[in-house]
Image (cartoon, rainbow, N blue to C red; front, top):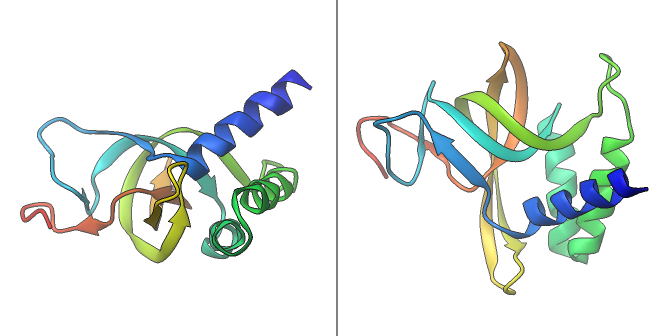
Length: 141
């Protein structure tokens, strides 16, 4: 039960507040560079549709609906017998923007834009939530 409560609290934090991002040294700006390596505490899923379903539930029906959508996917094992979606800290290689979801409510009532990014984790493709898009590395947007 305690593990469930802790996971739910982390999920709420990811759905409600800006994500924690630590980029490789020497890179700054308001976007990730393509092929940039970062450590990010975020929600990772196997597909874009899975992440979009969580965010759409939150946008249309509120934070509790987003949490329920996440928990249902977290309880669903993928082909590798891992949770389909999971919140954790990941070291990723950023590839590209998969989707943009606007109007995601935050804890302060403000609605934000959240990006779904294609990434590699240990050379395997996944998608993650991100507070920043991908842009040219030499020319911050």
